[in-house]
Length: 303
Image (tube, rainbow, N blue to C red; front, side, top):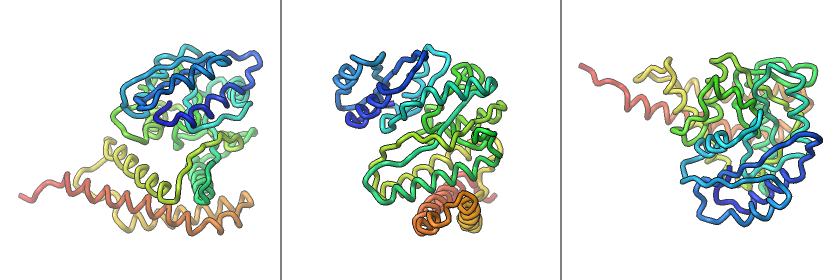
């Protein structure tokens, strides 16, 4: 999925060009989500060494770009790669070995390594890793892979394409959080997301601290929008009062402290603690605000 970032796209395609295939065949499909810059010269240049096609759509967001690529894909497996990712050379082999080992598995995701010039990326890195490990709520298998119904289907995820005959593709009405929403439908269909925390894909975010905080605001807004669409949502009633939001911050921090201690990350955790508190406070503060606004819009007037 590509949008407005030619330099990032070149780096991503160069990493795909360097993939070790060893008997595997693959096609690369670039979906340009309505960029104002011409991405074709980059695709044409890299395409001398790579089986690659370019598809252009009007700007409709990441879900539409994902679905366009999915419709064009012809292989047994499909992987969704953002243009600011860079893949390790053994990415294909890692996925092949996993699906050969786990014939009933449908979705495999990986860990992410935040790249860029901002010191805040170290907080981002730890924040995401601890979130995924805590949300997994499962024990890893002997290869260290988690199978969970509580993880988003993101992070350079590889799918058996047949899974999309059991669940709908990505929801194009969402401006974000589409991978979490899909994971909810996968869970409802009894399909877990598998997470390999020991294999890292580089994510070149190039974000400042302010950018990361704005990202937390967007994630919380998207997450709340998904929650209020659930059948169990109760319009007019507070689901995220201040007490719950504050409690969630401290529950996360205490859980992360235990995970960090178990992994030998205590020093890393303590050094990042102020930033982690800021990230969490921003996320749950946005949840509180969105919930308050939602309740005000949906509460019925007194008779």
